[in-house]
Image 1 (spheres, rainbow, N blue to C red):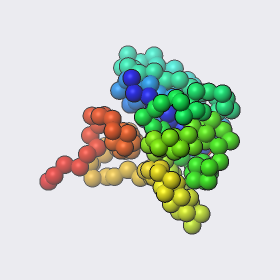
Image 2: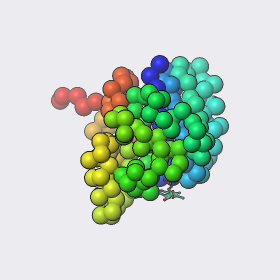
Image 3: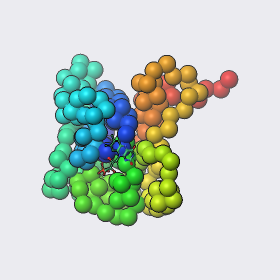
Image 4: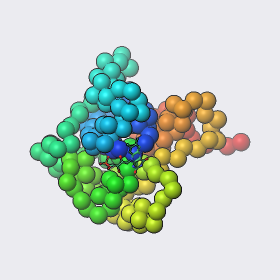
Length: 195
Ligand SMILES: Cc1cc2nc3c(=O)[nH]c(=O)nc-3n(C[C@H](O)[C@H](O)[C@H](O)COP(=O)(O)O)c2cc1C
């Protein structure tokens, strides 16, 4: 089973987190999930259910072929706080500009931030699905810093050229792009086709 860490922070766009968690579970990924406090609050606000209820729902689905381990963000003794826990990489989806700032500047005060810091130091793929608009110079500089350190900035900005029929199609677009970065076959209809 491929192991991926996913962080959920308090940026708008919980639907991207929902979609990524579901697709990863259906693909048979060993998902290591951690949310910031605001990540959990915004998830509840935007989706109407707590992330732990959502995880249980996905785990109980007949389509679930993977596993989801849900960590407390204050538990710095967790395996994902160490580089010895080998993973294919980590995605922060959605990623707030506050967590972006922490990642870009090496601040690792929570498990989520520490796991991101570890992913960078181990030279593994770190994907930041940043969501904010407009962007200040501070945000842009932090994105540059993070990119220079090896992170992939993958904004929550879906394309529209694949004729999305639903919000879920838009979320699938971003999920597909995240899996592309992790080199994981996903079967989602997100690739451009010649016309
Ligand atoms: C409903 C709601 C929506 C938010 N949307 C965003 C957003 O899109 N991007 C962002 O960077 N922060 C957003 N915030 C602010 C973050 O939640 C806040 O900066 C928080 O401290 C981020 O902490 P975290 O990165 O540890 O989750 C939002 C807050 C709320 C209450």
